[in-house]
Image 1 (spheres, rainbow, N blue to C red):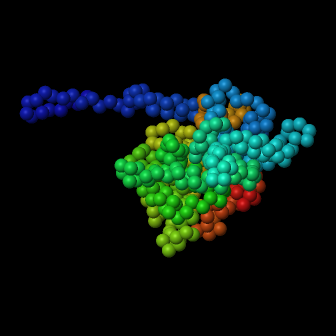
Image 2 (tube, rainbow, N blue to C red; image 1 turned 90 degrees about the vertical axis):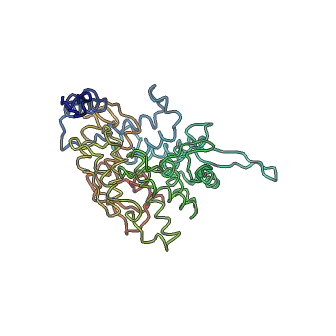
Length: 439
């Protein structure tokens, strides 16, 4: 405590300077961080720890092919059925040479054939079809985006998950995407008050955030939907004006908002995808441009570097937040993208790999699936994104573009022996070999 003397004779003010150690027990964030740090410190990290492939494989296949119902705690996920398919199938196809042992004649090829067939049947229920009355009085189906469950309105998030799942199972040619472009156009609107454009996740109502850009752009490419120059430049203007002035993160639509790891990923990937197309559509303006011509790379790298815990190597999504295994992809992919495009990756990928293998999987009790952090249960979401994050760590020095201005879909990977996972395209969220073999 210190006394402040006031020469004017006013009352003396006492200022209490509280030790940081005392503050620790009054801040919920710091209390939670201490608890997480203690639980992580109690686990002895093994530098030679590997991925428990068979354990995680059984977890994935149990829900994919055995017709088992979701656990009670997963019932709230019934409205995101396409996401569950994407997380599980992408997890399965990210594993390299999984040791399938499910009885006589049950080969991986037969499993994938069954998954392809069942995926087609399920996703047909979720594509939004509207019967429109034409002049000749014939009813024709209007194929819009995908919904999260049967009889719901279409939304960009389940559309993204559905398109990637169809890509993974080689089912894209079984769907009609003729009319989905008009739905994409309808999602773009102009604010009557400000005159600014907004891209919503759904219509007539929907959110307006970085997911909208990313989910739409990634969905459009495999479906070969030409969005047109004007539409792309409208998106582009929003993307490159969303970098936080304060933090340097990429926020998708509002530079005044707190930066977030997943939104930063969506924005960075969207910038990459749109710039690839603008170089072709408007070469006189964009052909020789690179990322640093549009965003402050140094500030972004600095913000990204602060996402990694210096002790355990895990990644967080925001300042003063806890580490979470899913950011191995959301934030780790930002670092990988920067490196692929010739910049510095500020994430220590070796430390991140150690976090994944020692703390995001249960090595003591061998519980299946991958988790946020010790003390948390595994789930489909974390299993997928942590496996993809592990891939980014494994292939840190083996991902590349044929040339500096190649399309992001052309990202290549030197598949190496001894790896337990396949290389993953950090922009599109699919194994590189899947994109290559299904082009």
